Image (cartoon, rainbow, N blue to C red; front, side, top):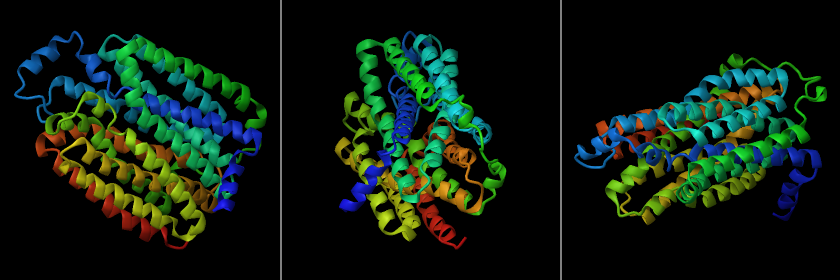
Amino acid sequence: MGERLQQFGTVMVDPRRRSILVIVCATLVLDNMLFTVVLPIIPEYLALDSEEYVYERLHENSSSIFNRTNRDVKIELLFASKAILQLLVSPLSGTFMDRMGYGIPLLIGITVMFLSTVIFAFAENYGTLFAARSLQGLGSAFADVSGIAMIANKYTEKLERSRALGIALVCISFGRLVAPPFGGALYHFAGKLVLFVVFACVCLTVGFLVLGVIKPFSIRNRDNTPEGTPIYLLMFDARIAVVAGALVACNISFAFLDPTIAEWMRDTMPVTEAEIGMTWLPGFFPYVLGVFVTFQLAAKYPNLQWLFGALGMVIIGSSSCVVPYCKTFGQLVVPLCCMCLGIALVYTVLLPTLAFLVDARHVSVYGSVYAIADMSCSIAYAMGPIVAGQIAQNFGFAQPNLAMGLVTVVNAPVLLILCCARQ
């Protein structure tokens, strides 16, 4: 145990690699905070001074996810717009990275994120909000993919790459789970302008760090880069395709719950708005635990990594099936924490595996393969907000959760059988 902890510390030994890892992690925290910070504030913001909203609420039978209004559809499209654009741009950004390196795309992503936050800060209508949210997707397609690919490129040894990516995963989780309560509180006390100006300043800071430390325009960062395997060939690699399918499956339940769970909680259990804002926050702790435990198990049993990923998918799927039957906030926290634990198992195994598959079967250039991973997640989150409301209206809240949980569980043995096959 002590030896593994000492090895874990070697991730931070090389000063340049340490600086790059810190910058990438800061970018991932920022991007994922921007992804979820709008969840608690956009519905309220769109409701302000909205005659359409007042009319619809007066004519509803109840405040329920089963009575969808034009405003609800607008919110669903707004939330999905980021993932849709991210899905469309990721293949192009991955190919661009394979040819230009990872520094320039990272800077592009941060710059676009800055523009998005500025637009959000001054947006006063739905069209401007939609443009800002879509720009977030464009920035993420460059920033997320290039950041993860840069880590895979800098940390080439199997164990240290898994450690570095594990640190990045913790940063992703921190950004996503902490942003809603943080954003809701800052919006309540300081307003939307201050909230997004803060994020814009952080974007600028990270951008200057990229320019000063990574030096993306340096010829050294682009010379002697081998030509990567085209993304369409990677998609036809059966093992990469299985990993991509697993990433879609394990995100489906999260993508459905994000836009529906708040209203469902209001309709079915005694909760405060503060509790709704804190819904996912307790899941951060089992997520971090899951990353650490999975890393330890993978180091000890390297031939069983696929089993850990399959176990994570079973945990996610079974927990998703439990969610609709929770009657109190305390009960709900348990399956949501289990889902976060499961996603930690899946990501801690599968993200390093994509790099190892490329090393073993293709050219060791990682932009396109992590673009495929980004596309897989975006598929789930592009469909989730748009489809979730309609499904909930037609079938209720429980049935879709059961169906999507079952899809995740069914995919677990597929991952095990296909990926345990010899190369």
